Length: 152
Image (tube, rainbow, N blue to C red; front, side, top):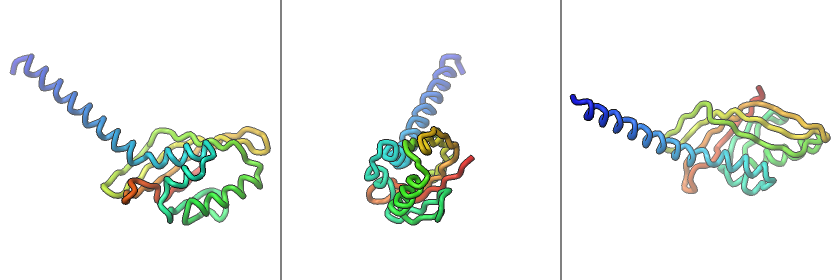
């Protein structure tokens, strides 16, 4: 094989690999868009935006009692009371890059290192942890079907 043909084959392989990688990244963006919508909504105080990222009966596990909820609305109600009792304000969710994922035709899963910042009675604080999200694809597209928060 000539050097020119060998180079052309290598170049085609690189270009095809880059295109496939770009398509996979685009698919990930679509599947994982609800988790960014949730974080963006929470960060901006737009609970309607945050809540519309979920299916109606999403399962949520978090560090404060009662620790498990069957909808974003129920979690939000109790989170508001918990934050108020602890003097928590200025919550900000910074999602990191997905560290593990599985994506199927109708269901997906992602582990996301996350940093939460807030103030407790005016004093700044930081909490590092992992969100583990599950997603389902329905007639309205991808939505969060559940998540669990784990503090590191």
